[in-house]
Length: 131
Image (cartoon, rainbow, N blue to C red; front, side):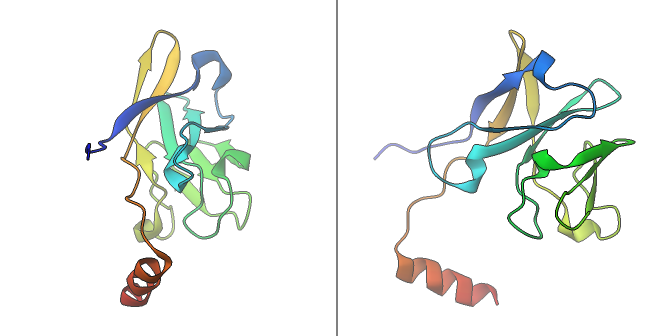
């Protein structure tokens, strides 16, 4: 069986990521959260790619607002510093940030390998161990 590793994925064209306007895309076919990516162009001209899911609830960060290099979640208004993804008032609950690069006018994000499939029993046991 081949080992699946992290991979660079095209997310959006550079011009689609206008300053302070999040862009959300589904870029993979694994059916896992890692396929959902949000890109924001900061005021410094950097492109930040994040998992398009608030760590609080399953709300797309791409529906949020950016002010002063802070991405504000549209659900409960959690605020995440860009480019680090750190939550401004609770740093241990930050957003997942992916490395980015620009290739041929595309913003690409380095996404982790999809998680190996697991049975419902395995998933339930893993959840029970976390609590």
